[in-house]
Length: 392
Ligand SMILES: Cc1cc2nc3c(=O)[nH]c(=O)nc-3n(C[C@H](O)[C@H](O)[C@H](O)COP(=O)(O)OP(=O)(O)OC[C@H]3O[C@@H](n4cnc5c(N)ncnc54)[C@H](O)[C@@H]3O)c2cc1C
Image 1: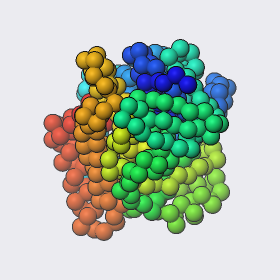
Image 2 (image 1 turned 60 degrees about the horizontal axis):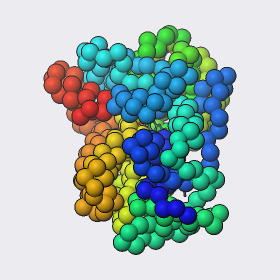
Image 3 (image 1 turned 135 degrees about the vertical axis):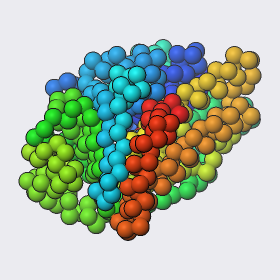
Image 4 (image 1 turned 180 degrees about the vertical axis):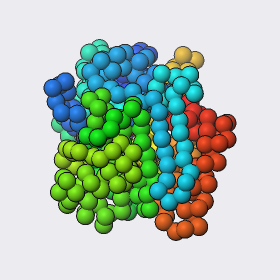
């Protein structure tokens, strides 16, 4: 088979965005993915998995020519964010208007993003899709990396990028270990109807040992993410719908009135997983394969899409300077920049989770003061908002 420039393993939101970004820059790209996304239809019920996309992610999707289609299909802008605490009086408010922006971010279904990216991959002549396929073996020489797929085909690529998610098989095959922490929590998700309108606002309340977020959906409902300890999740998942709605209303302190209807629920285990290195010979990690973080700040895919921007920039710069773009000295720049940002972000979410995950009184006093202090100090608050917008 003709060698390609870059093989991207995994066509989730991050891998598909990288493949497109590189193809648009003239690289020949092979994409290996075991499962094509299911076609998205406007008549479909809003999928339970949604993400809050930061403006930086939307800017990337706009440059890749997929944002217009996503926004036209179904995306919900949120203009405000209200964060407060059940144990202390502190609060944190963000307004897009304070930042001179139309929106703080957009709530979009994962499946819709994946479907639009997948169609763009199929249309791009510089991209060869291998699907359904997985990598069964990989080997690097000085010049390239060879991937053997389960259908028997062989791919030779100057660079292989693993974007195959938090449980990355390629990361394991490359001998890269991760620093892991099990939060002992599950995120319960559902879409709910509330008595009061969501006002295009993302609502988040810290509870003793738990966090509840209501994210505004385009149809007037809210998508909830309720992170609770494992044992509590078993109880909450077993509640009937009426009891679940009643507990949700209480958890948000009735800020949107009573919760009056819910979809079926799903839940996800919450873990921190940070790769100790992002590189191996002719190999790099990106997205959740490099860093899976707690969803309380809604930043997982936004960090991954920032990896895409950085890796693309580093590869293009080296190629334009007529250098081998897949050698360690080039890739090291990507790793240095992204690993520090991702690790700092993960540690910040981790610290928030530790402080707000505790119901001990001295910590509770500290946590309330923390939110109030941040809200009162303009530059600090702006720094928080900038970070959330992906421009820190
Ligand atoms: C409850 C919850 C809420 C969240 N909310 C937000 C939010 O609001 N904002 C946000 O930014 N992030 C959020 N996240 C995180 C976000 O969902 C992830 O960061 C994001 O999905 C990671 O994208 P990815 O493309 O790196 O990996 P994945 O989405 O895991 O995609 C991996 C891809 O690789 C493929 N694959 C798997 N194994 C193989 C293999 N062996 N070979 C080849 N391909 C393979 C998969 O089929 C898939 O297509 C949330 C996460 C959870 C659990």
